[in-house]
Each structure stands twice: as structure tokens, then as C-alpha cells.
Amino acid sequence: MNPTITHEPVVMCDGKNSDKNATISSEVGHPAVYLHVNTKDVVHCPYCSRSFVFKLDFE
Ligand SMILES: [Zn+2]
Image (cartoon, rainbow, N blue to C red; front, side, top):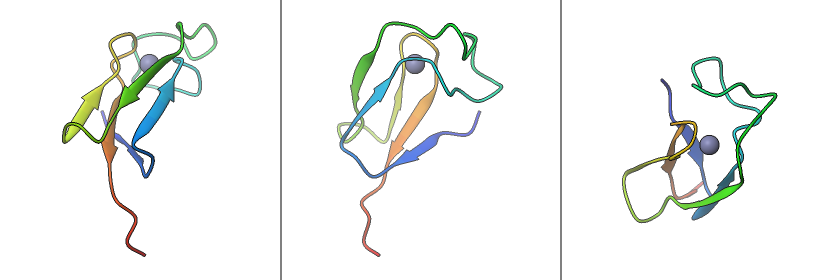
């Protein structure tokens, strides 16, 4: 599963707009959670297992 690259230190995930590999249907989603992606190299959503990677935007 490809991680979602984000430039925000905190990303909201509600399971919607997920990619095809998500374990939960993107139509149903899950309760919104806020993931602090700047605390680890890769952060996984506890609900839908999407992975997020924080990248500083130097461009
Ligand atoms: Zn999620």
C-alpha cells in the first residue's frame, strides 16, 4: 500500500477517499481521527490502516 504524502503535521482521516487497498470501504468510512504524522516516519490510521508520511515542503 502506498503511503499518503502529506505536508501537514496533523492529518485527518475518516476512511473516505481511501485508495482501493483500504480495508474499509471509502463510502462508509470511520469516525474521524487526527493523526500526528510528524512524530514518526510513517503513521498508520488505526481504523483503515492507511499510511501517511510527513514530508516538509522545501520547494
Ligand atoms: Zn483512516
